[in-house]
Length: 64
Image 1 (tube, rainbow, N blue to C red):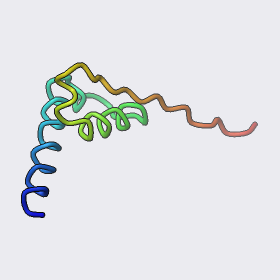
Image 2: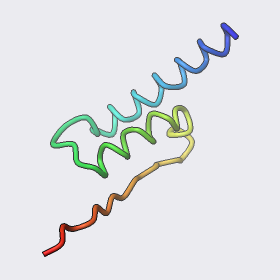
Image 3: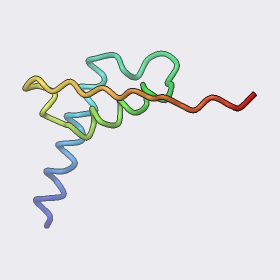
Image 4: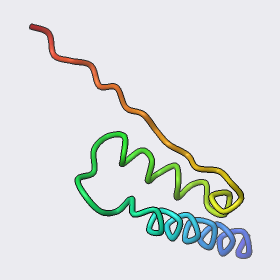
């Protein structure tokens, strides 16, 4: 269990570094950008073997 926790933390750190290298943490975080940051962190090392996760966000418009 202990080794699994350490591996999980390392996995997430690698994902956070990938997001930093792609400059996701700069600018105004909108819905799509926040989602992309989350999936990039969760993808971890897979970012370095070609995975480039992106999230689209379509919020409903208010009624008129």
